[in-house]
Image 1 (cartoon, one colour):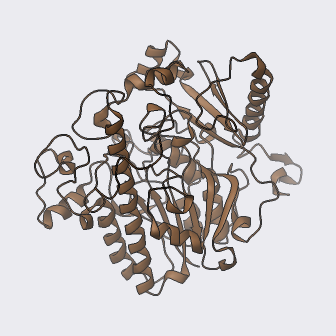
Image 2 (cartoon, one colour; image 1 turned 30 degrees about the vertical axis):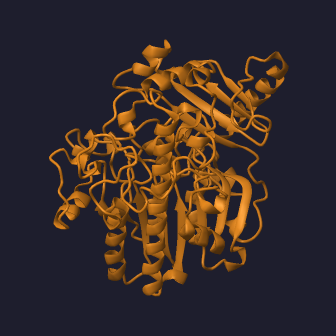
Image 3 (cartoon, rainbow, N blue to C red; image 1 turned 90 degrees about the vertical axis):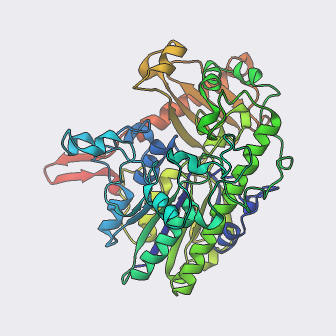
Length: 505
């Protein structure tokens, strides 16, 4: 048995990594990790926001099977989780942070407090340090260090002078007092206590909003630097593409990204957007520094070369591209995430960059396979082990898929605004080298020629010249759904000799 460090840095875009060729962002520790492991350059998550994305990541199942469609949707207790799979291999998987897993209400009593939050714990996980949206352990740790905690705790992210707008200002705590630094410190104490091979899941909030970071990261990047935003000249032009885009432009608010400023996210200048983006880049570098600290901890303990080390994200961030912020919709910016795996037992693959498409559902079966377990044959994900061994799967992915459900059970706002049914508030995407097709349950589809329009500025769905392409991709999506509908029992036939599993061959 080997040790395992499994890191998710929430809302981290795949392109915001130095090793991925970003012209500005510096991530020396991640780059070093990539040089010693395998970097998956075209890795995509299968859902958003946090709870749906993590359900896919933790179960190896697409959203259409795990059915966690929003934050607060319970995860069906019948689904095997990564943590439970680790227990079957003799590990006590231990959490630092959060998993945003809604509890199956059928597994408990109606009065259970865990039924009042979407921030439950992934079944099978032992919790060492729980850090949900209200980060109580971090706040009490800050207070013990002499940091003044405001009566409204969210104001801890505000600058010490109380200025309500955080446009590029540092908070009242320092670089060694971030939530990331706090969790790494807790991990260091925990590692010193372990006497058997261990598995830890470090679930970092950053670079998730609020977009604020201490110095030196706060001013690390010049807002004027970096690439142009991938978007039309004006947000109204983007909104003309599709009713859903107009709706989210009106729905997204500044205060959801940065504490203080009111109004819609479209009400801002290019300079504002660049400042927020520069702060986000600083947050990425702060996480990178803490990942380097984890490495140092393990090297000092003599455990670095006995540890499988995995870094990824649950989903990504629009970051102003297409005049959008957050994680939503169908654009690559919300779904392309980093994945780096360093397996000390597979040094021959060090520095490899995999250009094949891979998906977040692949990670759960990959970890099971790397640790010597039997991969359940009903999973949608496929082990990536062949890439780590220097080869490739017999059938590498030629396309990726993801889903986004934008219903709101409490307010019904999206359905009412768009004039569609509650269950119509969903979309699914198929994306390959050439095209991206977006199918909405209750709204018109979208089609983009990715090869010739990488910024996805022109919708070709209604262009007569592309009708055959639209139909072909719709059929491919239908075939994908047919192949991946819940397969837990569908491959089994009861015979006189007993159950026979057709997928076991």
